[in-house]
Length: 299
Image (cartoon, rainbow, N blue to C red; front, side, top):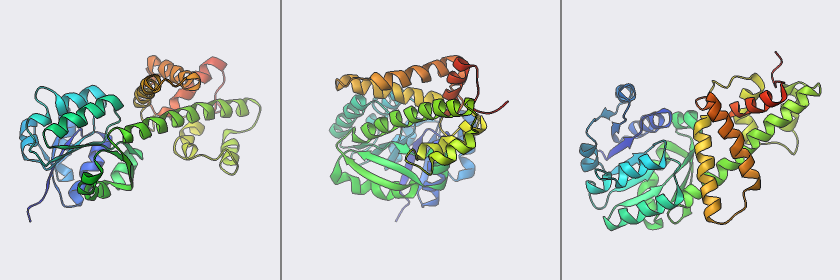
């Protein structure tokens, strides 16, 4: 049987890992990115870079989109020269970006009219998880068609969970990320308080993980908070800020008060507006450090 052909749009930190594991899993992968350096880098992974998007759309069975904004996702899939105009009926689109729920559901309906199955498959696990093929993936879309994309998801992920109708995966991801963002902010404040009161950050963090304050967020972002190394990017702050905004839009749409999330949103917006967007999410701690004139890491 011929190799199944897969297109991947977006060859950044997450896309590279996805491409690597799809190739390893036996798929023929065609890659597209607006960044020339990213396009050249996929060759060593075993993928074929193609600069004409239409050529990819016309020949692939499956299309992954791993893009930084909802607008880019919609343009790539449903835009004037988007995938829906060229992909064949019976093909599949898997959006692994974190996107707006309403837009996701609109694209699902547009794809359905073309006989194309569209799934929202947002990821957790970061670039390291993508590289190892150990991502956590939550999926929204047609349950009957889900079995057809499961083999691909198992190649790039470790924990795969079908959630429900279109948009369900995005709902889970946005709710997850506002909690993560909030915990990082609260960890920053509590570590700063403890350090200023005379206890080293390492000891505070260690006891958190042995007590009822234990959290995976500490395992992921704690080392950066304790070391002050915010250039060690686990998840870019500007991406977290974008996800918080998407969550805020969703909460507003569902008429949920945002007393706490609005405060978290403010901290990330301030951090992003002060040039910390390309740093790790943990760099939000620097906003508190500036406000207090103290630091988590002893100078």
